[in-house]
Amino acid sequence: DAKTTQPPSMDCAEGRAANLPCNHSTISGNEYVYWYRQIHSQGPQYIIHGLKNNETNEMASLIITEDRKSSTLILPHATLRDTAVYYCIVRGLNDMRFGAGTRLTVKP
Amino acid sequence: SQTIHQWPATLVQPVGSPLSLECTVEGTSNPNLYWYRQAAGRGLQLLFYSVGIGQISSEVPQNLSASRPQDRQFILSSKKLLLSDSGFYLCAWSVSLVGNEQFFGPGTRLTVL
Image 1 (spheres, one colour):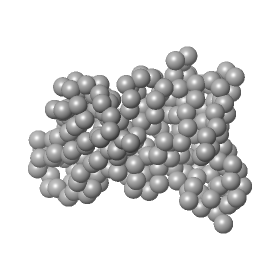
Image 2: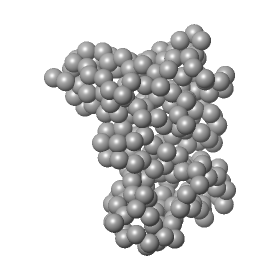
Image 3: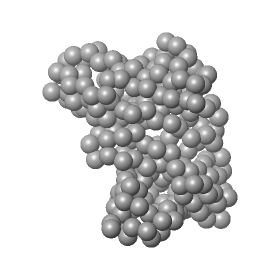
Image 4: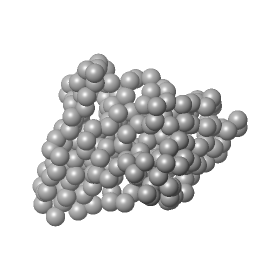
């Protein structure tokens, strides 16, 4: 069973920031939060991951609350190519459980 | 750089026929290897993972089996396919440490008729 809860769908205007929330209230101390996205009929693409500190890379930013029970993926300037299903995953050793994800639709 | 290959890309098989899907990784040694299945409109389900040659862990009981005959080769098999085996099968690899991301292959779309 997935350890995360995400809204099933979200819309975002092109050029605006997309903020995708994720709840993981049962996360344990040694588990990381990962974000992947999947464009239709392709393999998932890694975006970012973190343990407890906020993280930023060329694709996105990850904000993790202090109690680590939730996080937010931020795509700072969404483009039409960012339309995909976004998965938030809590990962322990050799364990990657995907839930249903959030279907993000970026609209012009 | 590392790359992961899967074949075939698509496959249509009759019920009761055998299955063999292959995954190979290049550019790394002793990777963790994973097989996932994604049913239509659903998230990914972890089927098997392997931390080394000949070592297979199964996450869910089912009609499928996995083998790792070589360090960078992972095979998903079935002796007799069921209709419910249809789906998108993905192979992935990761470095053998906690805190590393998994890298996914292009996937195989299997349709059982």
